[in-house]
Image 1 (cartoon, protein in one colour):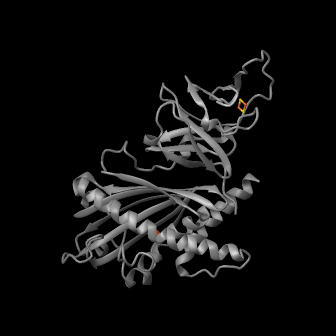
Image 2 (cartoon, rainbow, N blue to C red):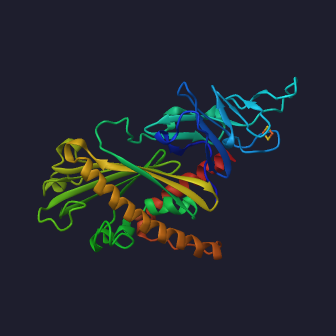
Image 3 (cartoon, rainbow, N blue to C red):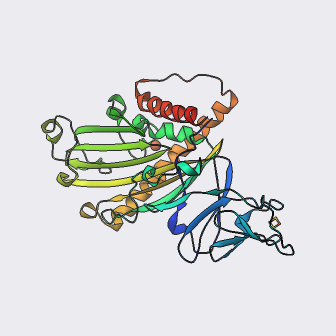
Length: 342
Ligand code: FES
Ligand SMILES: [Fe+2]
């Protein structure tokens, strides 16, 4: 299973990264140590001391530097060793790989490919706590399954009817209708109107709406979605086009989600969700996060079980259905990138 490298991967939540406290995460089988220094700058190095391969994540922050706490080599944020206790001369190979790292939209992003190609403009426009319009909660979930399977899951919401029968309660009509799918330069846009139905998360309420949802699924595995409820008739009035967020009657909300491949068979799933300030409050946010916890646990059960079945014989081909169009488009995009990088 292969993934693009010249992309930004989410490594964690910036608020979980305390000053002077190294954090370890493996991305694409590369162990990384990430830390924030007293000046607020965030750095990422290979988590393997050049001396005798102790993890630098067990090290100590000293200003902008990180000291290996086995025998005391001192690493700069560029990965170059500046001090070897008991030895004057620093050999040229006394260095580890440094990774470009950025903090944006509440996430720590690491560039896993060629550092000279790292471009901040390629960070997906997620909505984090820096956006005051939404009241967000956040969480993360570790998977014993390849990231690729989680991406596939997020690119085909027909599973809402089945996997999430208990949580999201999308109903059979949802899986029977196909969304609108548009290829994007760096992903896929998936949108749909559901006419004359109760609002999302209020399935038993008597009021009916035209409900709209739209998400971009972007490289390397980032989902950015908003949805809202409109007056019945809006979908037809707009000829099933894109509505104005400001015209929503109720339920305007946003979620940002990121899937990071840790090893070939493990992944970390990061997510936030919450209502627009004009459409909800902290209590609503907490209700949504509880629903998300239930729903994402449902996904995890299915995807981890699926991963075990696939691992028994990975050579067997899948059989795509009409709902797999976005899955296929996105995976082709990844395959093209991987081929270009090779
Ligand atoms: S292993 Fe890091 S200083 Fe020895
Ligand atoms: Fe799901």
